[in-house]
Length: 212
Image (cartoon, rainbow, N blue to C red):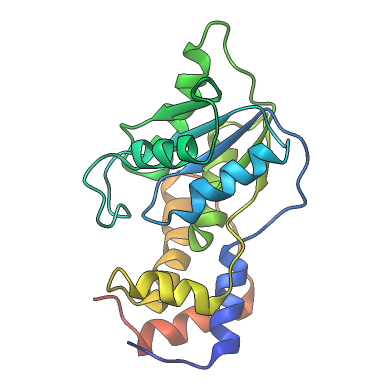
């Protein structure tokens, strides 16, 4: 596995994984991934009283790891084992990317009788995807307030998590920076300007640790 000086990598991960002070919300949305800390984080927030419901979103996609069934189904089983009543859980299991995660989830909320509110939503995703998830949610639900709430982590923990899936973290981080440019230009969310040091770190890492 690749090794780099820790401070630049920590800065890159920190930028990609914003975390907001938590407030009471209508809903917690957990975004599918092989990272099983995501449902655990959602359940803890629910148990701490931050929202009355959890929605898990995710089918089988590039981030599913070893899952043989939709990510939302795996997360549902974890939440049930941790004591969340089934009636407080919603699942959306057809989506295969972040835009679909959000669009299909919003459609599911609107299809409930009566439709479920989402004036303020807590978003929980794998840390390195967190900024992109927030930007995509803002594009698709511009009138809703959202809070980033990734699992609490550090660089070493993330390295170990991805190493278990035989993945290098650093190329994933640079790929995520590229997506912030590409997806903004493509209209998946509003274009953003990245900090100068993030651009420089990403460019350096991309040369030294290309995606394989």
